[in-house]
Every structure is written in C-alpha cells, then in structure tokens.
Length: 56
Image (cartoon, rainbow, N blue to C red):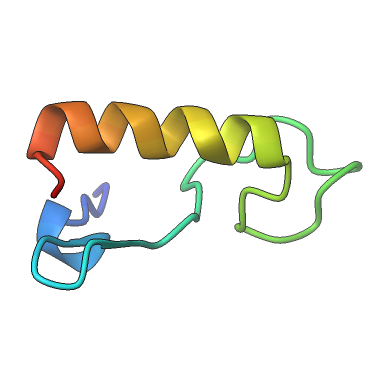
C-alpha cells in the first residue's frame, strides 16, 4: 500500500509555509535526506505551490 500525504501536511496557507521534502529521492548518493537542498529546485517548488494553492 502506498501512503499519500495530504496537501495540508506540506502547505500551510495561513502562515504561507512550505515543507521542502521530496517523497521520491531520484539521486540518493548526492542527497541522503528527504529535504530538497538545491536552492533553484526549492524556488521552482515554491513558485508552483504558490500558483496552484494561492499565496499572499
């Protein structure tokens, strides 16, 4: 069984906070954690989330 997290566990519309974690780590040798460490990718994720879920 695959566990799917809901959006509200990753995005808080009141505080406008994003949790930068990836459930799929495609390059585990370069990144041992679930966190998205690359600042360019983090910015892309932020832009997409703000567009889809709305941001102030």
